[in-house]
Image (cartoon, rainbow, N blue to C red; front, side, top):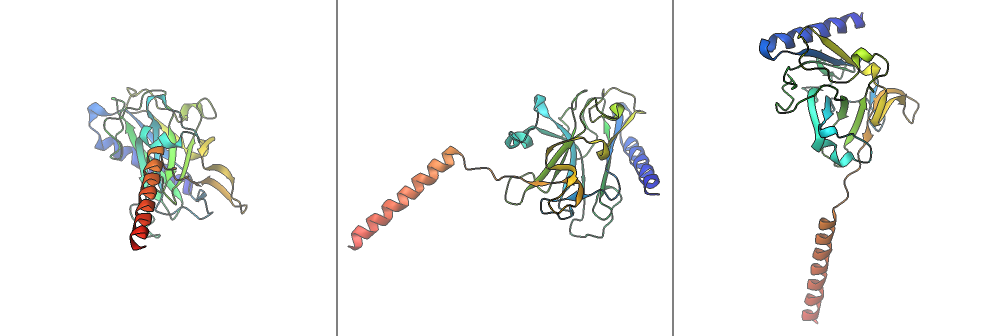
Length: 244
């Protein structure tokens, strides 16, 4: 029953996306989704809420994300589409599209334009998603690296499993009647966070986000802080001498 419903929902999303796009710019449709009642948890083992967003996209200029270059992810990231809860403060919204916090699934449908761009309102019109670029799913509560930031980054490696629906951007000039389904069930690689494992408490999960380390102060900032501390120390000594 649920599989039938989500299939109809995906078809509807694709149809609405196609109708909203001028004929001259239409390309293939990419439908990206998870299953109903997938298991999404944060670093503390709590179910993901409406403060989290799901983005599908790729990295610019051949950048390959790893745990060691996490500082550069945001600067190289290109958003293809985004799924989020429009009312994160209302746990009972049950929105059928985007990020559904009640039934714990996300769903999106977007055109891969013949120009190579994205038909999503959340994408940068200047970004191009060239044929062969690997797509990633980025789950986050914020992209700012601050206390409490949590991320997960996963992908479906090319050439594995259902090759026809690998998370790889197709030729943008393909006919508008062509569609692809990038399903979370096909994901096989976690760059950050966890994929298809169990939490510390033994709870199975589909995706679990991980805390992101807060950046260390840069050398210039450390020198500035040291100089400020030195200046304050000299002032205190001078004040003490005057009083004496």
